[in-house]
Length: 610
Image 1 (cartoon, one colour):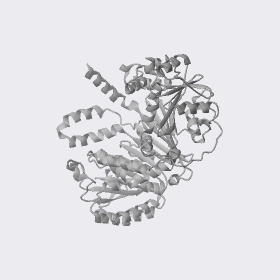
Image 2: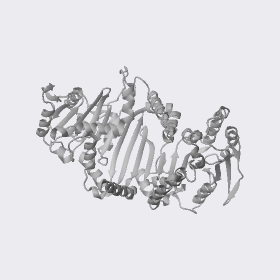
Image 3: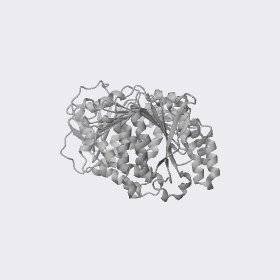
Image 4: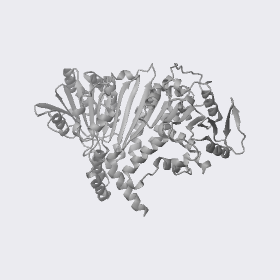
């Protein structure tokens, strides 16, 4: 059993890789053929205040990536508490241990089995990378007693003589799949012997530790605060200097693979990737490092990514300093699938808000020639707006989303001139758009654009979707109290409700029971604040699904009844703001909102096993 338990170190290394670095590692592994003679200059920094017995003191400064866990037992405990709350029949299921064992075919059932061979899972544990081609992965973990693990190593290295490096003994497995060393009460594992040697050099001071690397300062400081259970960081700047090809080539390959699929989701994803291919690659190449930390608290999950940009990057110029208050949050609806509020420059607003042009037909070619002046008009329009805006998204009767935009204005007259004249003229050339009949609502004039004979890109490939696509698409807009309200859909009800919310006549986003939890978790001093309600999404999509699959209407109706009593909570949240020459973001998931659903599926699974 001891010999089979030992590969947990390898397991944890690759588990972290799967969770946090799939895309990045794959891109580098495919592209890196020979290292370029390019060095990345790193400034020295004072060492951090790290506990003397931390494994961080043994990790080389030049590591390309790090996965760090302050305590595997604590992470396991929190996951078990969450699992037992969601599915009481599981009890203390040792869920993390079982996931690892089942995924990799190892012979342990709980972390207690690992503690029997001397691993100390109450102290910190780390996996680090010093090369990606070949994959140079190493791990360091505390020991309660070195003797049991020495017996395991002896079994693993049977037939291989121990070796010595600078006075320290290390072993290689008989299959050549791993190398091991014991430094006092710390076990070192590495796929290659060079990894053990690097750790030995770090211990004796020949190589500086990662605690002296300024790129890791923020990450290590945050993870040592004791509120996160897992953290990861990758040195993107150093990695990208070693690429033989380009990130854009890897993205092109991914896009081509998706285009070969016939389902709408894959085609839509390939379209989004294809349209932003060059932009995504250039963005990644501007990064210095990427980090993330994980916190599990009761039935809430917090993931906190941080994207540090290079000093010469201009990407952050699109944002302004983080707002102390995203003022339009309270004016958003409390029953839409998505609510989002932004603060940034007009350039950022153009990029975010014009993506929906992709749903309009790309053919015939004579219409395409009108796109360039149309986008010029869009850029001019956004120059007249202030730096805060909001958007809400919902689906009701059609597969085309209904949008609500709220813009703060800095030049209201210029905005009116563009909306009432030049913008409509350009839209007419592009898609035969014409002005609808104005209407008055509570003293506010509502105007509209109408898109006749409306179709979405690729609609001819899915004729069954025609009934779920409106024959006409409308844009409605109104000016009120220094703001522009802009909605899309087939009726003016959405913009009327928006004006009613501003007047305090109907419930706002802040009235939703989950709003306060989101604000406490994400804050409002952000450049971006986004909230999503999966429950509302399901409730809205089920009727559309019934129309698309009439033969399954009864089953779909049963599914709809299941969700009818679920609260319309916003269970997923995301926020981001400019900080420390990077983007500090938060992802929040309230799994407790799905407790009833998960328990229901648990009962079904139990019945199926009877």
